[in-house]
Image (cartoon, rainbow over all chains, first blue to last red; front, side, top):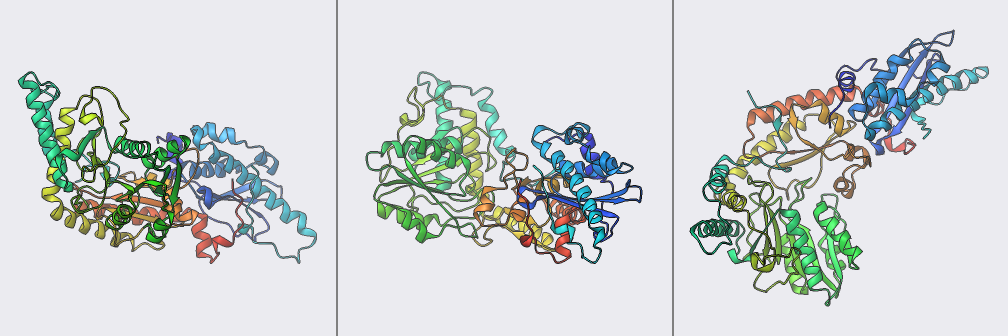
Length: 146
Length: 403
């Protein structure tokens, strides 16, 4: 299958690969997908006091389009507020990367990963009133909306 | 150095051997006659060439030339064999048996026969890809008329015990068809000893041209088929249609070369395959799919755990290989063959089929090993599953939300 130049660029030079400490209160972690389906994305965001995403990291198991979609969203979420990040739609990701129809699910997964990361961050902060409770390891909580 | 991308997909198709091309060309130029033309020298020359080619095909597999019917390829041969025998013998029974890891040419033919009112049993395979003989025996019924099993699996290269299955079918009076598309030139086939009634062949898996194949139809004991293609009564009525002389000459020459060279060639190919295997096994978490002892020498199917097959293929674009994962299709289903072995979803999605052949060199294998070692490492750095594995998380304990 032929990939677009942007997919190949993100695939060959993935941006922001890596991991933050899941336990860091300033970090939100989202992991979506399933090995059975051939793709799993982990997206992490670092959020400052003002509620702005200052940094992001990803790791993805999946095809080239899945890797490119997650690499792209790490760039897009930086500098955005949580609400702005939540408004990123899969259609914009698919359009930017010129994904063919069979790869649209990769962009949906990337959108879900952002939502899962933001929700994880918000859950940590909603729970701030009872800091004695240890956080469940986020990496083992896999969410998927669709 | 090498011609890029390096071709390691000989199970998909093989290049036409240059010696085969040379044999074919005259039949596209001056020797263009119709082999069915009985009234002039153009026809006689074409007919002579077709019959010589038929003899070469028969010689490779140990049968009589009269038992070879030309077709357009293994898919057509399988259709003719399975549909032809099932419908001819339908008064005797309407139960057919095949195996879940068969090629789609067989599985889809069986599905069509189910639609026409036949009943089909799809046998499972053991984790090594081989058939459990006792399960096959248990599946046979008084109304079973046809058993169809492939000699060599196209994805994992395992060789089924065709001699034993043949004995069993013959003892029950059941027609036995074997899809040998992946077997010619790799496995010694002797139809004078095998209790096989029908066998399908392809030219392009054995250095011949695409678009041509053959079906062996046993004469003693005689097997009857209902023709699927009607017309001028060519091929004794089994398969009408003007014979493509140049294609048949190509298949004949390819099979003649296979017979002459397979013993030495297979040893060289096995050495290359084993060199590839040794190199890949230096990488952590690499698993071979399918039995290694009952396997053709040119095939290697391995899973690189925690790396998705399609992204790996993209990473090794200097290699022409094929993925067991069908992520390119909308279904996102991993290989049904690997699933049938009981492989986990991760391993099934992480598989690559390497198939080496006549023109593969040691330098190409070494290049492939080096590239894979680097790229698998790179993709694992990107893989959250690898990270979890390294942290000691059991992936089976994770509640994944299927999508």
